[in-house]
Length: 256
Image (cartoon, rainbow, N blue to C red):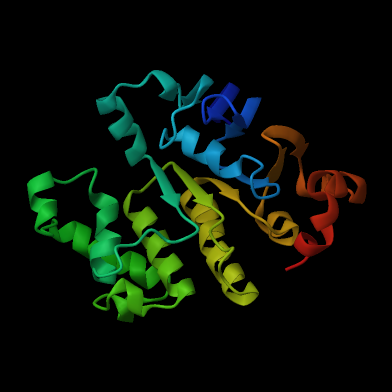
């Protein structure tokens, strides 16, 4: 498969050099992969994801996306790159008082006139696409409800529909199911898998539970203290490696 992302010696230091969140890591992501990041809380997963689209500025290193150096991109170039990089968050990041439909349409903000978007005026084709994407994630009847009236699982589906509106090349999901019950978590993960397999979207998802990582990932990258401690196929994580990654918490994250 063709390379979509190359990360070379990426480092992120917080708090005047006192906290090393990501430590000199390098890896590549092939186009069409479903890469899962695993590791304990604080291992660097969220920081790594946010460095890729520069929601967090790297301290050092290089990130290349589809041949473009993200770390050197101008503000204008970065806006264009972010159109192609959708993101789904652990806490959904919806505008709670706005309707579900408005939240989904916000996935097109990078493409429409800012003045028109400020008054929620979108092209007809975008409205049709928004309804189609709500249908795709199984909640078309929720379109005119306020986002805060929905359950957690439904809100995360809104986040997926919003991501679909970007028609991205890359989808990054930061602990997208950690706040959900097991059945709902699998339902949400299946929509991400669908985007990957049917739409050809490259997915990078950070997950806490190894069972989910093994079920949905085509490759796993494990972080510990900001460093890569495993990179390979899901089936290649044996008991010893698993305990090395999670230590005393291994039993808590093995099954969900």
